[in-house]
Image 1: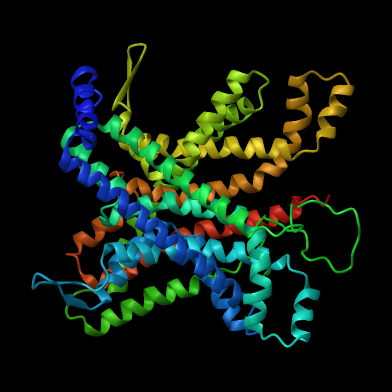
Image 2: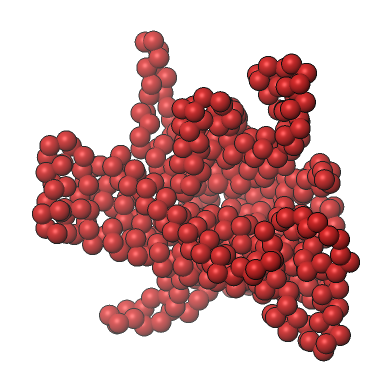
Length: 248
Length: 281
């Protein structure tokens, strides 16, 4: 392994292609931390945004007008304002209202750190799109199916959970896929509130080593791979949900 | 979804429309801004009650409002320019993706995928750091200030998305159009310019407008790389007021409000056009 790492030092000395995160242990630690933070941020946001989408789509089918209105306002507000400003708003404006707690070193730190705010803000942002995606899937479920379920004595929640959502889920996966890919790309915004994710750590490295070109290309490849993994996982999920004779 | 040969009154699933049209009314409901306005007024009122000699939060916001609006006009300018550059390059790339030449087709496809799958912020950094601060064209030195570089950086993902929009629109046309044109002895170029692309324009308009709204919201990213647009100015205004914590919520909410008022009508218009142009096959 050491020889493999050393090869990149030789590469740098011979060609000038400087990839310090390969041969320098400290930089390697930084980039691995960044990669881990990005993966963690993406995974948590994907999970929460899908949950928000499912719950929001259920609330949108609510018999109460006020509930539907609130969900609509939420969707429109989060879809039509810049995610970066939303992030700043949560982190700076809402963040100061959150009580501070004592941390391990005897000082005080906010109850929700920048990572937490990035999760909250990005999940709500992507969730607004997911609500619409799930809604479009639910609209494709025929009324007669729901009426049949009602006739069998299913409650509204049961109909949604056991009948509408499983059917809708199978048609919305391509749209959901698009939105989740966008979400993974949007996690770079967390850079702005100093979450130590991939872009942030890369920035640290290129500030120290003045190797902007190499780090940029590495970043583009890294996000390409991350998005690829997500798309692969979604396709796997899509296939595993497949019911013979349903859909394509 | 495949069409089944038999007809039934009780389908398991209705045809799925992936296009996100909204079911609630198609009129612009600007009362949606009420929550933001309430937020601005409410938070400033809370701040007001506890304030001393200093100006209230709302008055302070009023004082800075002209500057912030000027900053927003700069955002709009960046977005319009990036859209123009991106559309021009994207159109070329999109037509390149339809080329019969394999090399042109695959290289356009690769470029499109590359810029479409990269995060906007990374592309922005890409342009900021890798473009020179001035270019020398035949002895004339053209300086490239930060905001021009940011515009180019934002134009790159727009280019890739426009390219995909064009490809998608051309592919969505029934192949009968191509065959009919061929039987009428149109050359490939004539078919593309006189028959296919004019029909595509209508289909491309809604996603193109949607892209513009996304781009406008992305212009705030330029603040991260130091262009003095609305977000930067907000930060500076807050700093100039001595970092008063009671000002944070009204100021950031105000920025949200400006963008909402600008982008929401575009979104509504997109939905309306989508519905108007939707073809029932």
